[in-house]
Length: 155
Image 1 (tube, rainbow, N blue to C red):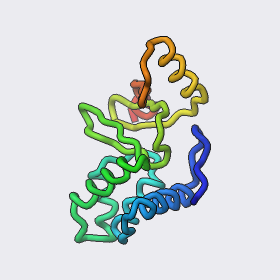
Image 2 (image 1 turned 45 degrees about the horizontal axis):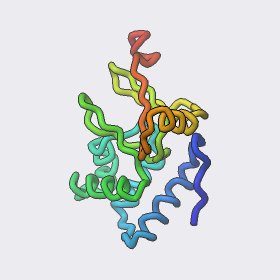
Image 3 (image 1 turned 45 degrees about the vertical axis):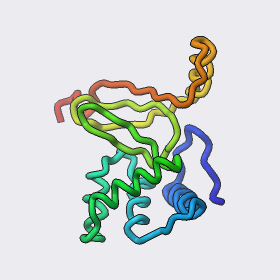
């Protein structure tokens, strides 16, 4: 099995791709050329692409690929824990295939850019929240919103 990167550490694209392929095969799923193209986009794209963005990229090499194929592949990866879905009321869902575990995001409210800042205390914060609230936490999400440097500078 390909080695998993440590939490907070961005995996190398090929390592991440190998891990996603391994997970799909372990779960009994075929790796079609179209599915592999989706995995490549998710493993390499730091911009948290939408399904439509993935579709546009995959369609250049596989013109007969349907949007439904992309949705099904992303849903399968989400089910296997290989992609993190970030749902937004204004922008729909975006997907993080590079770091498919809970981590903070900083989101530009103007252009929708999403950045993964390094934050080493996320696990500690989750444990503290569980302790203080009495909840058994099953997952968490921490997002910060503001204007990115480009939007703030009017570019």
